[in-house]
Length: 268
Image (tube, rainbow, N blue to C red; front, top):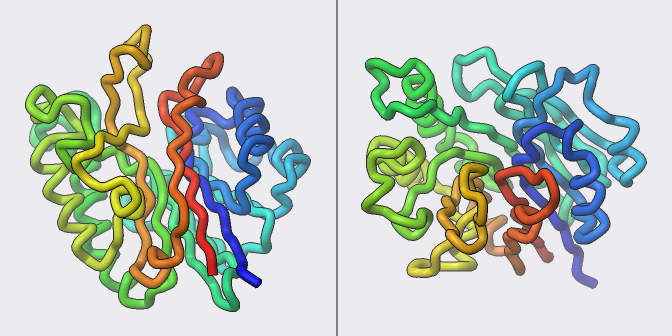
């Protein structure tokens, strides 16, 4: 009899503001594991009781006040949960936990890469410099992780690496999230042994987006999106992926996050 593990990643853009959205999403898809980014609240203010009422008895948090914070919510026990520090920044941007699957353990790495501000020049924009430093740290960190296998990396990585990941490659080349300095680094990180699970399921030349700006009043009609949210896996885990869904309908909900969930299903 086959075993399934359903995992979702979502930049929820404030868990307390969008707890009703999380509940609606759970009712629709009921993932075994949900990785959230930009939770925007200290650990002590996280709505743990409400999350447990949704069926997620196990959770590990790395949150603080401000525009940061990640969380892993699970219906299954979590093993070795820790707020790993990939980069040197003292920000709540990374969390790791193991989940049982197919007689073994899948290690889930939940990341929220810095957005980088508006000016794509590290010499004049400290926020962009911090983003580049984070991406460089991911490159140094990845080989050891992928070498062990059994890993999934998910989250808001704030980079749209391919021309087909943005609504206009030419117009966004100088816009943070799609500059050559960012996209080149992302490709280099992927080459450390990761499989881009979303692109494996929906290959180029298909356009794929997970984020639409709040500045666009009719986001669906204009469709000026970017693929900022990602699911990567080591080859052994990527081979188990049987479905990938981008739930763009959530962008049309009342008071939505500007990001939408990605849901993947593993089968063994």
